[in-house]
Image (cartoon, rainbow, N blue to C red; front, side, top):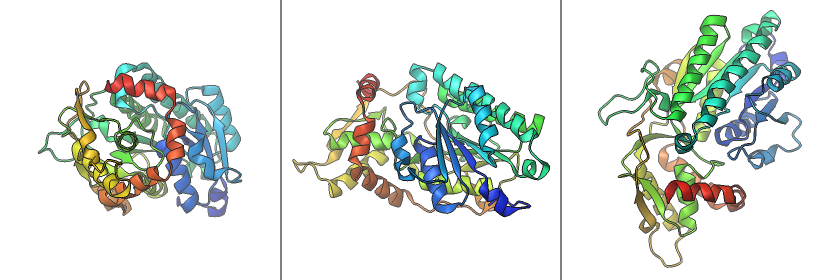
Amino acid sequence: MMATGSADTDQARPVLVTGGAGFIGANFVLDWFGAEPSPVVTLDKLTYAGNLNNLVGLQGNPRHTFVRGDICDADLVRALIARVKPRAILNFAAESHVDRSIHGPEDFITTNIAGTFRLLEAAREYWLDLPAPEREHFRFLHVSTDEVYGSLTPTCAPFSETNRYMPNSPYSASKAASDHLVRAWHHTYGLPTLITNCSNNYGPYQFPEKLIPLVIDRALNGQPLPIYGDGQQVRDWLYVGDHCSAIRRVLAAGAVGETYNIGGNNEKANLEVVKTICAILDGLRPRADGRPYAEQITFVKDRPGHDRRYAIDADKIRRDLNWTPSETFETGIAKTVDWYLNNSDWIANVTSGAYRDWVQKQYA
């Protein structure tokens, strides 16, 4: 926990989590309640990827408050911060799907850049008015992505915190811009910020437009499993529970103004990931005809500007904050497939007609 002059007083004050009904944000809120005593105020716009069912386990919990709202709404954000008086703001709110950013980049510019700016300004105004002890211990933690660094060749060293920013998609460009804003608000105004850049997350509550839940859902429904290009795009896969524990660690002990890369130490090609899921399903939920799920794999045209490889060098967070992931890819993917098999109602609720139209448009 963050050191304070009055620990009991500090723990009684909430943290504000923006985007807390989305995939990573909701997992973080749930993880927080299992590990920390402070209350949580969750702010979420509830777009297609934000889902209150992700937080249904917190209904009636007096330590949790949900507020529906947009980080782009400056008046709402300022009023909320003034009312709840958080000891920290953790910004998960973002448009995050690369394919959607290619088809419609404006939402990404609005939320990821303008929204982060408005949140930073509201946080700065609040922070400046805090009494000295509270101002000293306040933190603004911004959750970002490894995609801001661009693409790696097979022989390149993994991304470290000193890599140049070279984003290649509208999504990653918007996240890079938001990172720069957070950095600037620290260096110009002194706002006590922290930035985390994570690798590809997977786990419970992930909207099934992303590779792993998409494959699980389509496999079980007897549909083709679309693989872009040759399927050899490599990602470092990070189980979302590990990501949550890393963020808590950065919030507790990270040096103000610093950036920490968070990775799972699990570089896997997309095709290998899909084949692994198929093999797990073959054992847990065999097809009625007895054939392997891998027969449903279908290669489709690669997306524009598809980055070939991402990999995270997480040595800094290991060395400075003593954090390492607990899950291997094998243990994490087994937990993930099991969760989706046991939560078919959740998938049915989020896969609306609008979602099906999107999948048809993207993978036709």
